[in-house]
Length: 199
Image 1: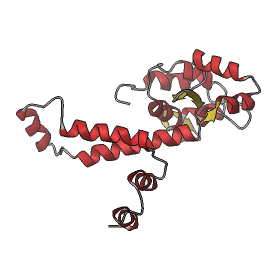
Image 2: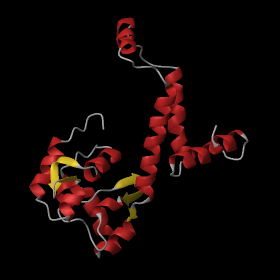
Image 3: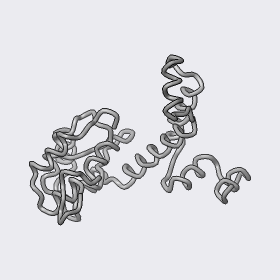
Image 4: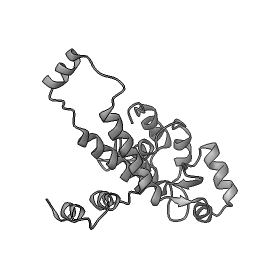
């Protein structure tokens, strides 16, 4: 065991603090509730696969590993916590853009600005902003993203390099592309080509 695991076993850390330290981002009890739900579903599955399908999966090297599911869930919850904790409030976004808070809320409703509801508040992921405004053209890109898209999928679309976008021979993300003056229509092609199912 490493020092983190030793400290947890010794009772120096509760589970949320240990998970937060392991993932490098704060995890709270609400996020851990998702893990508990996953554990319950793993031990009481609602659907079974056939023996023939199970053999195919076994032959292909797939294994039922609840810790892999929990690890993936914790990673997702940590990424979501990082995304929302670095986001701007409505007031901060309004100040950055030099407009009123009502205009920010209106743009969120129009979907020309990316907003995530956290509890009863809207937060606006920081990736869409420059130091003194919003990334040029990004509002048009955001409007083309399906309304039901998951926040981490949207973040990946906007921030991960795409094969369709290159600057000086290097793959770049939509945000980098638009920030360097890239063509908006090419960025929109990336949105159209993105596979939302499973993300």
